[in-house]
Length: 317
Ligand code: UDP
Ligand code: MG
Image 1: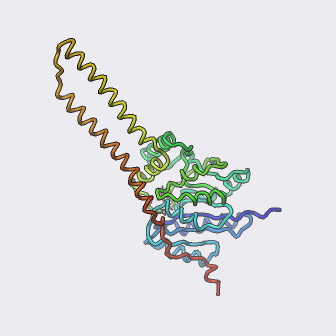
Image 2: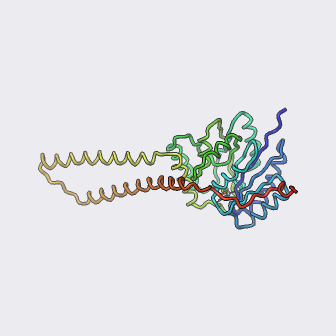
Image 3: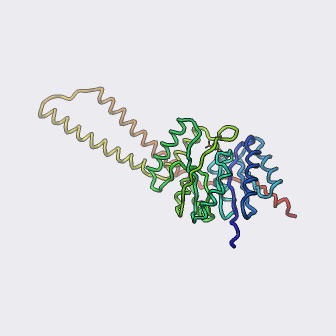
């Protein structure tokens, strides 16, 4: 009989001292129930300044399945997750948030689905527990980004997923800086399937994503996977020129055939302001891409590891 594949869990942690004891407890229970092993959990401490650091180190000393990668400062959720993907060693890798919104108890269901021969099983949110306006923004965003992009981004799915080793390896070859992992995951392709999962409420503590950070993630999702905004700029220009030509013809006709001088100062002001607005907007869109190009050509590393804590290190002579 083939031995059970080694499972790794990849979990970013940023100031989750209130959640960690419960998280560690529930992870242990889930891992104990799985076949095979030893499995592992790679926590990436994304520059926490609360007690998360100590709690994680203690956990790794107690349980050799827990590995902690401490980053040198806060790099953000997506980068922390990428760091986790760089350090996992399993044949299968589950990606989940550290606030228990992605219930670890669902992992066996992912594993079961995976056995049907998939490379990616991603969670599709059955229903969200956030405020109505956040739910509306999410719904609009996912539809907009998948309409704009040339790869098929699954709707309403976050980072919670189970990945095969080869998908992780392919994702790691995508070295771009603006990391939108669920997009990169979809970009890799192979056999992917969604699994409806109830998204729980954050167990404790505050969300670490502010509105601005969410907006940045949304922009990454659109600009990193689509050139449509640039094309819309060109198209808008074309429409403006056509309208202007038609209006010019009309004005000439009125002047020379009907002998009426055109009037309307207000109209001119509105037009000038409107078109300057359009121009500035698209300058912004071009700037958005230019800024991203600049980020990429700098070729900075995505993150810096301060140290890695594994209890096997301590056992070594
Ligand atoms: N997180 C992180 N770095 C950050 C922000 C968040 O590692 O800069 C972690 C956080 O600890 C949590 C996960 O990413 O485990 C998701 O964060 P959060 O729950 O705040 O995001 P939301 O659920 O609101 O999207
Ligand atoms: Mg959360």
